[in-house]
Image 1 (cartoon, rainbow, N blue to C red):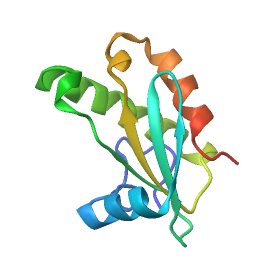
Image 2: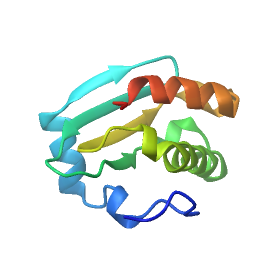
Image 3: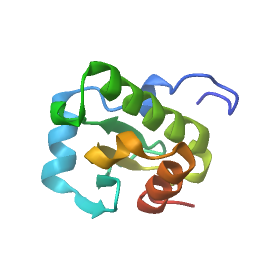
Length: 115
């Protein structure tokens, strides 16, 4: 596993296949907040893997990519505090686009399994 100073979210920490997403949706549980709906499922690994699904009604491609970058950064910076062994799919609500980064970070971290 990579060091804490890594600038990108490592490949082993990302959900990559459609089947991975479907397994989380079908076999997991859901938590919700003002800004996010988060789907969680145990993955029998030491590493948690993350994915996001941002619907087109959230905004144009520029706005959706901004949201994606913010989510990736929150997960990357806080990976050590998030409990290992989970597959997580994050669905941002439309209100995410107007929220401040620290507020999003607080809200998302409350929904994720922590150590």
